[in-house]
Length: 142
Image 1 (spheres, one colour):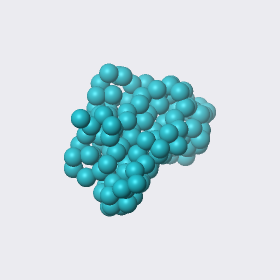
Image 2 (image 1 turned 60 degrees about the vertical axis):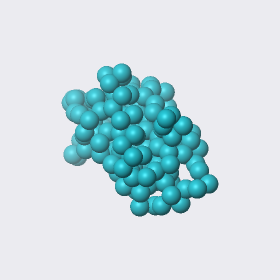
Image 3 (image 1 turned 180 degrees about the vertical axis):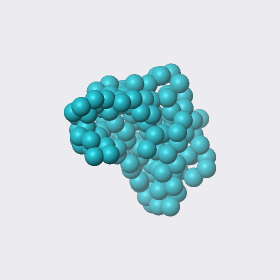
Image 4 (image 1 turned 120 degrees about the vertical axis):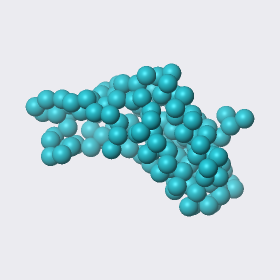
């Protein structure tokens, strides 16, 4: 039903925002909105060396699909991509890509915001931040 409209990936390999954008491209779209999360070099004034992401894969994929289906239903979007990395990521690398196409920009913006916020609240993906002088497990929440 929605398989041609939804693209969900959870992988250890590098993510491509180009692949995500190409999936949602649609000549009927008045707007395409993307969120590309990157590993920043500091958190709360501590220098970040790297991040490590772990996921309960089966449940994470299921939850990501639910988010995509809700976005299509509630925001009138054409297509949506939700991609997330697992494993070790260095500063500057991309752990998450969300791209949405819709007839109008407002729907695309709202669906993209909904997708990233809900992903961080409900998807079983955990993040370990490794600093110069220690490490801490944190949820993928903001």
